[in-house]
Length: 120
Figure 1 (tube, rainbow, N blue to C red):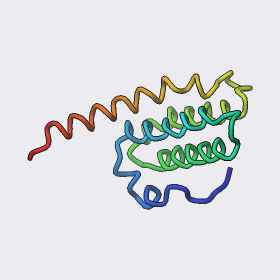
Figure 2 (spheres, one colour):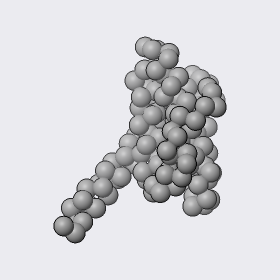
Figure 3 (cartoon, one colour):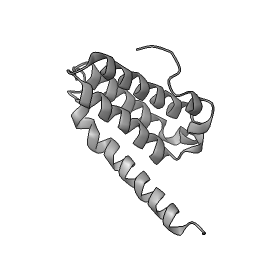
Figure 4 (tube, rainbow, N blue to C red):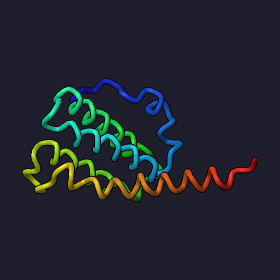
């Protein structure tokens, strides 16, 4: 894993414009990509892992979620465990998908409501 900034526009403050639901939904997209490439293509797998970790870190740095920092940090810890074979928590990337899918689903619903109720 490297320290190169992968999400330049997000790291410059756009990430802090997203709700927690949107942030976790986006992290879940990278978790899903990692799951899909695990054991198939190491370059694509590692890229998705790096992007997920960067998004986790941006979320942990977002001061709005101080009351949720333990949950976010634990999700990151379990993700890393899953990436390295689930030795500590017996976790897998597949196991993490229901957790992240709920955020993506709610974010999608909220986007739909915003579009549906936006003034024309």
